[in-house]
Length: 454
Image (cartoon, rainbow, N blue to C red):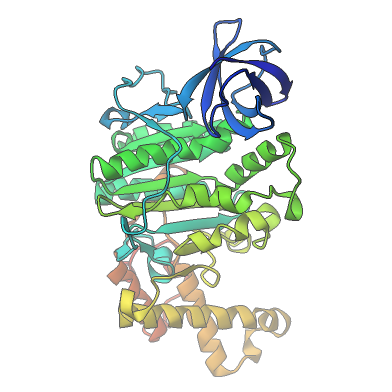
């Protein structure tokens, strides 16, 4: 069923077949004159003999009339325990300079999500040891978490900290999928994981900013295929990290435009919803093992209502919103306590005490935010005694919820801290009860639990 190239439009290649057409999502290979190969993936049947395919790579060196050899199905990637501690591209080829993985166990990157009865709902808290996360937006075991934030507010640092925690505290497997991010960041992450001694329990799959839209669009499926292997065959509990979902949407948009589809709202592809669902619905927990997913989502122009961002929300159990305003105050992690939410934050899931304390913390911080304009114009002396007390405690809570990370030790000179959830709740309870009113607020900055204050 060999075909030949009849047209090349940038990253879209039109191929003619005399006999049977390949199926949608089938891959085929083109051998270039410089002895390198390029893989194409079918996206559209344009007539009874021609298909439009997206190039998974750059199309330099392709020309009309070149033969294409079908692979007989979707792109296959090797999966095995040997993948641990390695860095791969979308094809399952190593990027770390070490030996190729044996192609004994090959899996297609396209697969249906598990059936309704196979799936298991997220339950229980995955304690991260990060105070503001555990208290106000707890992570569900086997659920999905979204980190929303503009450029440079700390999404990638937070992701790296989660990898460190899951490997060191839970001895789990981490699979990191880099979609359209800078190659520098992927390299730094790999070196940092080697330095911290956590790379042996992790796999990195990278489709970086400099690569073609086809690669950036398909790299999440390669990473998910690896995660599914460890979930179903090995029965592991996995932390699946994706940085960045917005870049995946962007790659889908580039592919859509190249295929000549009409744009939808705000210029995004008309298939935005289904493309996101294709990825998100496969990142689920089953009876064999759990996949807890943490996804960074870049927020263009800090606009949380952007369609690419808004369409991710329905898939998530927990949303952690990073704020530029909080980062500008030097409070890290720069998480907005009022916009961050979790489905788990109910008395049934976290217990009565945790729920009441978290609600009280949010009330204090919300009231403090309302009073900021009055304080700026008239000064804190003009507030009523009760409001002054709220401001006093809210400022201490704001400082107490900052925390030094293990991954930033060499930059800040502060030793990273893991704070158990019960210590976080005790600390907030003491501040809210007024036991810490006499302590200067700067003492609370970047400490672990409240017992560190003598």
